[in-house]
Image 1 (cartoon, rainbow, N blue to C red):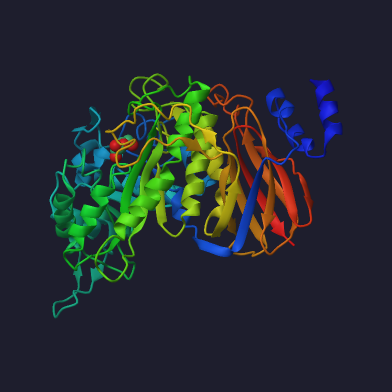
Image 2: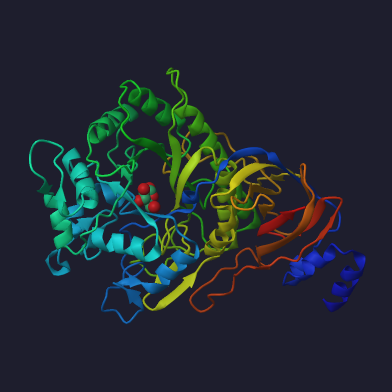
Length: 567
Ligand code: AHR
């Protein structure tokens, strides 16, 4: 190995890029020829990247809340008000902007009143996912979780099994100020009863929740409705809701299962048949990538072949079509004014079958490898490339679940490779997305001819089998505070060879650049409790820059962030 290192060093300055990468595979396959081009066009802005596309989701499911987020105030595990400290710290480290709760499917059988008051007096109930819920973790504990992280709450309201009255009273409970409130009438100011109840439960200050999911997956666990039925429910639930400040309410309507554009078209046709659109901010979109090309929520998180690796990433990149198809379907109305409704992709991630869960009671928990890190990069890059369309996105789910950033069991804790990608993408938050053209030979999806799964929520809709995976993909943005600072994130999915790209920035030269890379010898690499740092990012070795162009080698199966200072 040492000999080939010396030989490679002599061969080209570009090979130095590979030297910074550990492991013989990454090193020995460094290429010196230009394999790809990335042309960044700062003159073609796409939109401001909403910081809320890096948001999170936790649900009463398996070990997500109990033992994941919540260990209880009397636990020996370090905590703040019962919330696992390591969870808080990791969410702070990725600057989590928004946290969604309590579901998911759980939300539509959850009564928010059950989680109020003294924990000892709260009713234990049967909950979705075949589990019992002590209700120890309720609305106040969730708000304290958001407070400790410094993020905004996003509440999913129960539309299937509670009446509209509960929806507006939950809003009232969360947002009515304590103390005397003007009646806006000839009557004297009053104390709002629900605000008084909230204060008696320990939180006099309003929670000020503006983001509300009106139901969840109403085409499935949320009621098995058809779009017209849901539209009627949405109109009824949102026809009147209380407001206590100038903060606009943001209501999110239940959107499709995967690429089911028929749902979106019919929903909006039905919604727009009535001119009242109270606070309709977004359309919820759920798109999971099954670990199997033929069945939903199958495949192994840890054991997979190269073919399965490429197939999963190809199907993950369908998110691009999911975004553009639904965006088109929202706008597909005869009304002259274009709707302002944005996409809220509030569940996404890779969903595997059983086999790597922490223990049987940690339902749906799964391991995460480098493959999932690449899926994360591909997905976030899609959201960034469509900054004009996607306002919010929530990974499912933050801890001990499908596509998690963290795994925790009792006093054991680790972050996953996905956590690192979230951290590496932080410079894009609030930045101006600009067009970036990637030219690289595509990879043929070796499993593209497998039957396409329909059902579940991995792949429903109109798409045909996707045969090609981009040989290099990514996105670019310009810092909101420094117009000379450009962030470029890039995923090289090639499992066994690096890609050397020439990068040009239209209308500007490149003064300098630095970078961070997440790449491991083996795409199956992952962190576990015994090896929490097996996968972690490293500084990228920079390549050459001349005539305003940059040549950089992206290691095999890697996610890279480059910060480029323009001349
Ligand atoms: O995230 C797990 C489940 O996936 C959610 O509860 C539901 O909304 C979706 O089907």
